Image (cartoon, rainbow, N blue to C red):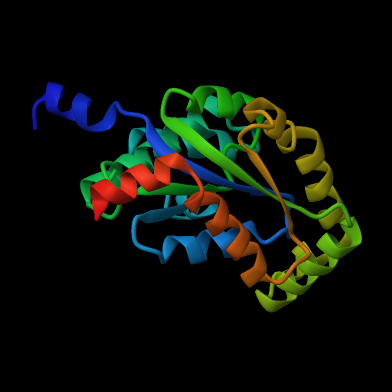
Length: 215
């Protein structure tokens, strides 16, 4: 493939939906379910890091920071995400001309959101809201015990994760603006949350337009 062909293949804005919320809000669950529906491709940031290929240049750069306990720059994190996305395009797992991306876990802060503007067209941000922090803590403890991650079940770790979300991640909602943010009560049953997300997507002009093209 020529350089020009690669540029045309990768240099495009990807239409996407963000599943957003505090740790324990259920965004991973909703992302996984949506990803099972044709024409939706779920991409969780956690999976990108777990599948990191340390043999690549960007993989080595990421490990160089993380192995030393240094904060990985937003630019490196986004480049790693972009490389993972491009690999999914190459494998045809994700088809950018007909699929919507469903993202969760990224962008984690406003800096990443600003960089990703050149790569994605965020259609809607589904904010799974759970003001009851005790409920979030209960869910996180339950998940940590289920996954046998005892360290993650401690109150100190849980409180730190929630505080980090409040300080660094939640401001991303303001970055995208009220017109793109859909507030959903995360304390509802997962199927009720999913129903609200799907109803919102199906009411959008972009869904109706692409549905006609993809049919």
